[in-house]
Image 1 (cartoon, rainbow, N blue to C red):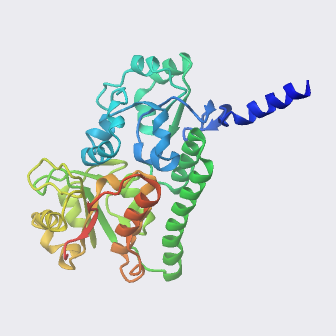
Image 2: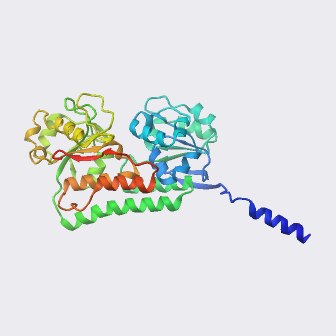
Image 3: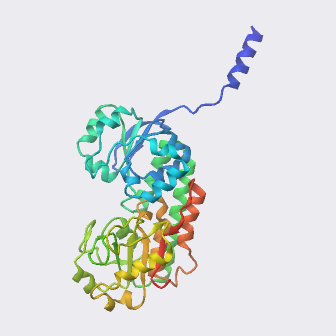
Length: 365
């Protein structure tokens, strides 16, 4: 009998340890308490693919059984190409459609038998009562939100993804570094007691001839505020939308930031990001200062016009870009910071690829 017990002990010790899922109640960004088996083995991911990979690690994507592909492949094609070149299996993850385009398929989600459906807050609100249909079918829905660009929601969203992926310590480290970066801005500005420069940010996807989205309470608008700027759009645009050109001129911004992507289709659209060289970015940026009336703006007179990568917002990666905005607003206070390099360093530390291109630039370069 003792020999048999000894053999059983040896056999059991030879079996690799397997992390067992356990039911955990997660309070999501919408304030809902959701029971989820974690670490989740089958995840449908609505948005924030890079954040999910950074927080959960590259292996976390081995458990992603569905994605809203357009939010990555169509919205950030250069990023999609970079990641799929590194890991071609990403291109084989089933597509569940896109909420804003009204192609999101509940039937497809359910057919993938996920342990959890992770949605951005805007997706959760866009689906409306369809969320209940998914939950009634036995699929927990968890909401995260980086679009709001508040420190607390960034930290909470990171903690939630850490729980879902079973990478709480990694999530805590990333959240801690993000918090430190933002608190550095707040601390320095609190010590200086400087007046807030008036600032304007615009998504330059339509080129100089047409004013495109600016931002009020969220995304770049919230980041401008976090960086210590006086966002001229705040009284006129609640979330996002174009601002009246005459109002932009009347507001006389002292700092202007034009955001761009790699795939600007309109004539003269701002180009930033993966594969974009600095001179091309600068040339596109200079096209915007030729708008009627802009030569008289303080920002243009003082050459305080900047380009920034649109894809570097609404993400746990965006602390460096908030610091870039702070440096644009208060160059003397943040002269020691190298935000673009910090952006690359995040990739080196937490992601399997490192982009090459232009992600932050000034018109004088």
